[in-house]
Image (cartoon, rainbow, N blue to C red; front, side, top):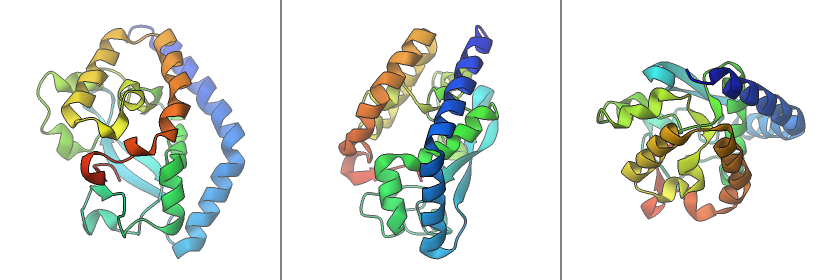
Length: 199
């Protein structure tokens, strides 16, 4: 892939630095999850990545064990009873996503890119929409900093395709700079009607 070595070098550098800085937060979060209900700290789920290949995404568990088989299934409401007590602040701060830095170091994800989706969503893609898989999926991305879950699904995909066509190290740095402000916008955490399709 064009300039892939440059993006991998940036990913490894940023992911390594963030892991080192965030280590106390990660340790505290893991302890809070374990104390809450003695369940597993990490939630693993199959997502679709680069070139349409599946991988296991890692997230700090914010919901009750087996939540994907209960209630709204893969969808989550902002007042969802399946969200655990530590899960509420982990989701509100997006700290639950920090464990994906390990996915970045393993080469399955990038710091910046389209958010990875579950196979059942990808099955509904048009040929054009599969272009999201021309780059590694990211922890943050162009669609994330331009509305996140408040945007309709088709619009988010179009933003992702725009990113694929215009990707550059400078654009990635701009997205990273805008990400902290995006995280503060709680209205973008859940989609229209207070529901998101992402556990």
